[in-house]
Image (cartoon, rainbow, N blue to C red; front, side):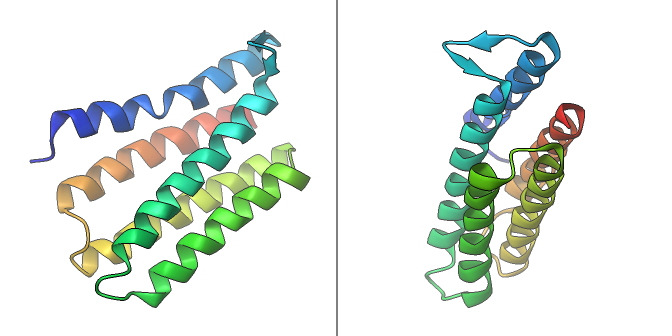
Length: 136
């Protein structure tokens, strides 16, 4: 059983995506940042965070596929945030988050993450991708 604090913190991590959707629908800014800034800034942070966690797990034992894929996905999000802050970019962002989930699936098969954590990642990725679809 996964620690309940891990579940709470993981699900709370989806709140800025919901905030970006709300700001977008209402055409508001918060603390001087519009919906686009919230969405892309937070997406870059989360993608880097996930990729870093995957990278760390792939070092011992060495899993070159996870290592390269996680870094590649983080760099794609960075590029999207710089050059494609459009609805097309948001759709590509959904694909990247799904790709990061597939890296976790690989790490599950290699015994690098628990089944409980895998199920949590499925749920939060579905939530985030749904919010991104609404945003786009």
